[in-house]
Image 1 (tube, rainbow, N blue to C red):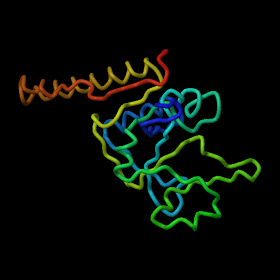
Image 2 (cartoon, rainbow, N blue to C red):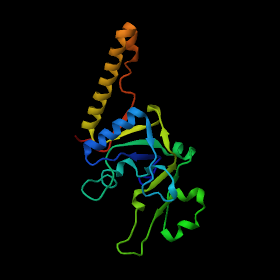
Image 3 (cartoon, one colour):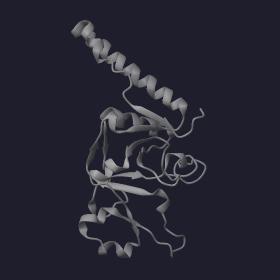
Image 4 (cartoon, helix red, strand yellow):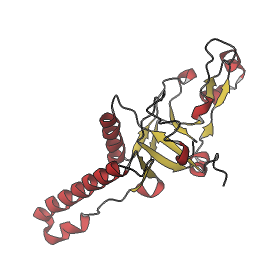
Length: 197
C-alpha cells in the first residue's frame, strides 16, 4: 500500500492537557462507545469524526505538538471499511456558499473550504471522515487503541490489568474461586505513534 493512503480511520480524544486527553481515552474504553458531537457540523447533525491520516504520518502532522494541532496523540483506530459499511463517509470540502447545494441528507458531510480569503480556510490536511450517529458502540476486537509512546502503553496496560484483577478479586467474596474467571487482563490491542518513551 502507498504510504500516503490508509486502510484505517482514527478518532482522536480531546483534552486541555495530555493527561486530560488520556483520561478521556480511559473513559471511552470503559464505556466502549464514542458519542457524536455537533461542533463544526452544519444542519443540526451529530457525528463521530475520524482522520484518514496514515499512522506513520501522525507524529509529524496531525498530532504534532510543535505546530498547530487541535488533536491529542490518543485515539481509537477503526478499519475504514467497517466505518464505511455503517454509513461513514469522507467529508466534502467546499465553500460555505455551496452548502445549500447539498441534499439535506448529506449536509453533515460539509466542511468549509475558502481558499480565496485571507487567511485561507483550509482543513483538507485533516483528511476527515464522519459518521452521522448519536453513539458509536464498539468492542475491543473492533479497534486498536492509539497512544503517543511506549510509556503510555505500559501505563494503560497496567491500569486496565489492575482493574480487571481488582474486579475479579471482589467477585471472589461472593463466588469464591470462580470469581477469578473474570480477571480478563487487558483485552485492548494498542499501538503507539512514537516508539520512544
